[in-house]
Length: 306
Image 1 (cartoon, rainbow, N blue to C red):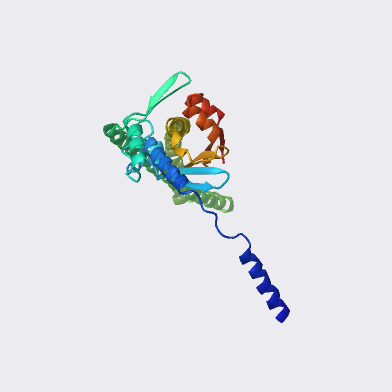
Image 2: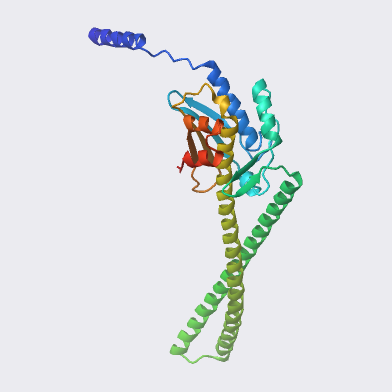
């Protein structure tokens, strides 16, 4: 026991004496990264709008900086009229001035097309109301389908009951001749069974039409959601590269061999994968100095989903 205690004590002293002291990150670098975080926040819609999450960042020494943002359902639902960037928080004088320029105008051109992030409160409200109305309509249709299916189950249950009564009467006829009451009962059962079968056929036809319409609308909504998500991812990548080109000089303390990455997390989406863009600091510097443009930087950057 004494030997074990001595070994443990010696191991603790060795660990304590080796380089476990955290390396200090350049304070200017931390300020650079905070400035770029604020610029990206502004470029992608600002922190005050509910459809965009707060961008966060982390730094891995020797590797670079990683920015991350969660998209909310509202961002995808109202994406066709994305929010405009408000002024960035005045955490740093330089960041405030740069973010103000971003807020004034964000126009990105590439591959012969252009787009801008413009904030239209009326359009956002209109799309929110339309989305809510569509959700209510889909809920009403779902309830209607549930009622029709329940009605079908009731008819099928009544048919089974009549079928059971008919079998009992028919079994009795094999033993002895049916009396008048039994014959009358059998006739009544057959008549009601035919009525229920006819009613069931009409109901099933209506139910089939309603189900087809419901599935068609649901498929259209899923297709539209997928299309908007594709557009969203494409625009986020373009905004990311354009922002790095315009304001990448603010990352002056990030080393040439390090990277700047951006992670878009599509939270709230079933089986959704996160999207990543990774740009080399050296390529960003080339874009800042005008040697390449934003579309070229985006093309040189690594993009993947995970």
